[in-house]
Length: 386
Image (cartoon, rainbow, N blue to C red; front, top):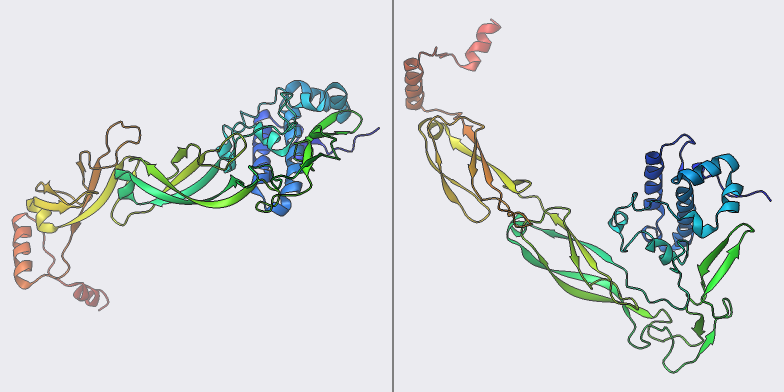
């Protein structure tokens, strides 16, 4: 019997000479693209199949022994030596995804993806047989804060829609008082088995969801789902020092599951500021001073994140010089000190001079030994093209 499976290299879109790093990169990109939680609901079934296919291809091609066997004998060599569950043993998925944050969805360890889809492929009893209790899904939400809030810390109220266990049926999906019957598809086992002659695939029963039983009368409130979507207001404390991309974990504020709530991950976005630019824990601002202040020196007022402060300008300050105000920046989020404020000086050159001002500047230039050009720009043009 000839295998009708697609070529593993073709599935991942790599050449047969591809290195392990190239295989990991190709798998990562495809897994992110086809993860069922990242596609519209109507494409979920197709995405699940695609996700299984690329994961199986990676599990074989990332293992030197399995890959050599596949290169020599094709699918038949793999199918005859390994059960479907064994194909995935030894595959370094953790090396491809450090955590589920790479997916932008909730989750824990990488192998939970497969149990979420109802497949027991790791040989640890991770399928849904018997209505396994499971923790609710983690959620992710983004929130904007100002630079001042990032510097001082703040508290935000997050409006979060999430699924909660239905109180009417306590999550069973059945109308209170109604009786359950044995699932006619799995006959009470909670799973179904598919075989192609070489291996068997155990899958959660799609009809009863792994419970082994089902109700004939669904709960009128959740319509048999066992959970209801509700909107919650959650107060989140944001510590001082966070920056764009910072992740805050709020335990127990994710979706509800039979084994408890998942967690909520809050992603921070710091809005651009009109006066300051942030560089790690330092902030930069630009201040323009007069020509006389640059020459003679003096004091100026400089904005900070708290209030204006007085800063001394030494005589002879050049345009572009940067002064440092100690500990006027952003505190380190881990408590290791505070950044500084960098003040870049710009010198304003006057464009319109009175006769007296021009006379005094010419006198200064003459005293400095500089040659004075008394012609105007217009006079120079006329003389050039005469």
